Length: 149
Image (cartoon, rainbow, N blue to C red; front, side, top):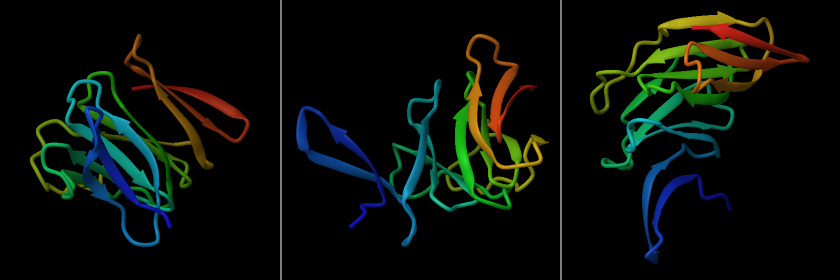
């Protein structure tokens, strides 16, 4: 049986746990990315899901916000070094950058990303440079590309 939950454990009392989010029935948790700047914000993706969910650890079980722009499964997510933007890539060949600054609890973000790039085939890897935050690296097929934000 799969658990399907994002949990927070207290290492001082290991029996104590808080369920932060549970993915829908029939899905499993695929990726998790913790914000570099906002320690309470976690982005996550469920397997075979075309959306990205942000959870605020202070208000568990209810998504803080959701992104619904991809037309196929999301494969990877990462926060910008400033954590005001989140990038998602997927099987639709799209790299989408979402502006998450100023969002309030349970606010549904527009389905239009702040920036978008189409690689032409499924993107499997993603990394946002912490040294040069204007650069993203994506991998697809047998290629790696650097994208200037």
